[in-house]
Amino acid sequence: MRDIERVAERLKIRRARPEDAEARFRWFSDAAVTEFLPLAGERNLPLESIVEFLAKASREDEPNLNVGIELLSGRQIGCGGLREIVPGESAEVSVVIGERDVWGLGYGREAMGLLLREGFAVLNLKSIWLIVREENVRAVRLFSQLGFVVTETLHAAAVVKGIPRTKLRMQLEASAWTRK
Image (cartoon, rainbow, N blue to C red; front, top):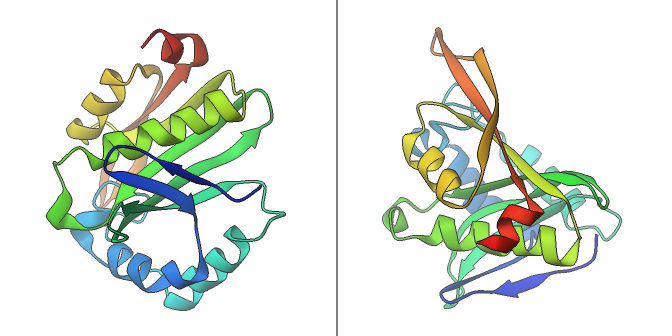
């Protein structure tokens, strides 16, 4: 996957870099940040694993698009990307805003918009999908507002702290995104 830098009104996304490791380690060690992620506060990723992942993610031959999310000032606030890319067909999208002091300010929506534009306008994908836990109400609302629709309900698909949780598979078709 080639290098990338896409700029929106208040932030930009750019290819993940090895030097992003410390910020990601901090975010993924924060139970509030990981509450709805597959990690779900049950384990911490070792820094070495994050460094390894980012070394691979930053290589030109990496088929996935892993990005850092930065404010235009250069402050790194999150990460995300497109993975499981089937060229000309589909990909999974994700965004994590790791800096809690900027939560609720619309940066997740803005970053998601850049990734959707990359997927549909640049990679010519027909659909983009994601998996979200049903109780992550803010995320489900955001994804619905962006045009994603629930295509599958996965009951008891995750167990968090001993409690079965439902996950939703949501999908956005290129035609629906274009209309928005």
